[in-house]
Length: 135
Image 1 (tube, rainbow, N blue to C red):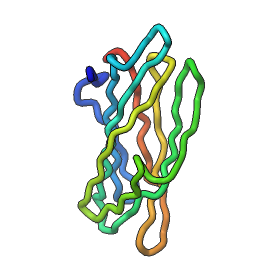
Image 2: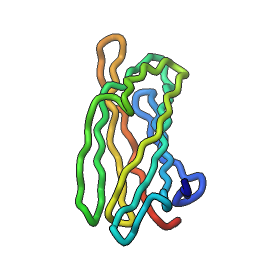
Image 3: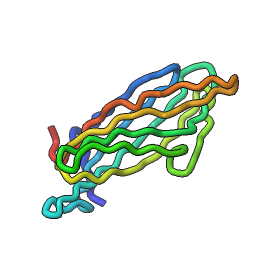
């Protein structure tokens, strides 16, 4: 699988209520076909609890901007089939992908997090660029 980040080491991150979400996007040239057009991007997500209370990721909501195919929203329970409980100092990592018709776009969104005390908040997923060509 040939992948390259649009700029080596480019990370996008945001902290909300002690939850740091870091995203590293990569373009999968070997799985893409510009003539179709189909551009496949993989993104690695690292969710760190830098706060002092546990939090469980129960829901995800994505905004996907594709200037060719148009914008879409995707939501659902957990991430890749899991609803991880992240203790203070804990980390949950996963990888997913997105297919765009355009050679660039961006994604952003939020995770709905639940605390043991019953409180709920939205941990922001920072806007991150999806590009076929390094900047």
